[in-house]
Image (cartoon, rainbow, N blue to C red):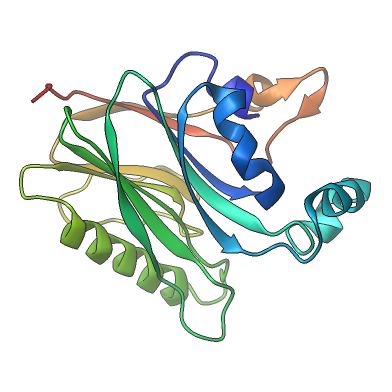
Amino acid sequence: MVELASADSPDVLCLQEVPVWALPRIDDWSGMARFGVVTRPPLWLGPLSKWVTRLHQGLFRSGLAGQANAILVAPRHTATDLGHEKISDDGRERRVVQAVRLDALRVVVANLHASNDFANPSVPRAEVDRALAFVERTASARDALVLAGDFNLRMPRLEGFSEPGDGIDHVLVRGAPADRVVAWPRERRTVDGIVLADHAPVECVLEVATA
């Protein structure tokens, strides 16, 4: 999936639920610079957790292999890691937001994975608001902001940001024109008859000028 998503040389990729064993490899798979953060440590060592998880991905998910978030940046850009912050409440599975600044473009990209609680949408909404607060603290007044990832929330409208799409995965932009927000159709993420992601990747084109 990483190879497919990076095949057309995007400027930035935001990934969620990356198995921890895969985190050191995704820069090689993509040819991009990696900024990663572990959100759930693995229960078992990489090779064993990978083998067992593949027996039934839907059952084991990240329980054995752990999971991480990552922002990948094309090597043509100079980027600064702005760190990460926990956005979930204590007692819940740890969720974080991370941010990277594309220096010459004056764009801060934040990547988040909010809690899955469709019965209580106030939970992911609060996490999205905390993610935004983190980004606003770390960005400068001149930076355009991109808040992207799995919001686990439909139509999360944020003041001053572009309109969200229909799903739960979003790319929201403030401070720069954004158009062509597209969710990949199923056939685009299907290889040899296998659908590589249960979430449709969302892509967006920004119009920014270099500093």
